[in-house]
Amino acid sequence: MSEFDAFGRPIAKDSGSSSPSTPTPIQSPTGFGPASTPRRARGTRMGCAVALALLLLTVGVPIAIGVLAFSQVSDTINSVTRSLSRSFTTSSSSFTTSTSPAPPEPPTDLSHESMLRRANLAPALREIRRLANGSTPTFVRVEALRVDVQTIGRDGTIRNLQRPWDAKATVLSTSPGGPRSAGLRWSQINAAAPQRMSEAVRNGSTRAANQLTYAVLLAATKTWSAFRSDGTLYTAGLSGRNAHRLGG
Image 1: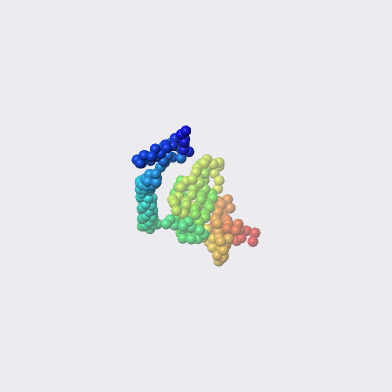
Image 2 (image 1 turned 135 degrees about the horizontal axis):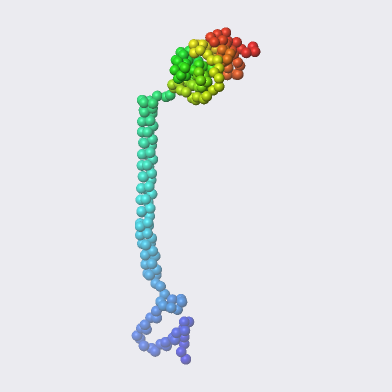
């Protein structure tokens, strides 16, 4: 009876022949084909290493170059931006200094451009009178920033005129009025009166609360009324002299 090995193959018996038998190929543990040799395994590992190296060269190098390029471009943009910013700032300041002087500060109290000062109020009243078209003033209000005058014409037309400290006189509005009421002569508006009253209500004080806010001349009473910043009221005649505190 034939004998079989562990894989079910018949075992040939020795017939005493001296010729060497053909070596049986080593089968893989699964029984399907020859087992892998150590040389083949080493070749596989070497191939994987080469492939990985090629992948790194193909992918890694472009990425590194891209990161470097982006960094250089970003630095260039930032450098150009800073340069433009410095140039713009320098040219802007030069332009402002050479061609655009800072606008003057609005006047307050009796500062140089204030309409409360006689030197500024007198020519302003002349401008307003020319625009009044023969009508007579019934109301005059003076503050540092402007002069407001209301006039009435022979036909009862009411005009409201204004002269700002930094512009020419204008007619703000006209409207039909009723019967002609009594007005002032232009010569009765003393251009020095508001300045005199401003100095009087301050009475040497430097406090802002003691500063004159505005002065009003009414045709009906022919008196000036001056209001201090704290609300205190002072009155005086047409000249603006001898101002006295109301109720004081």
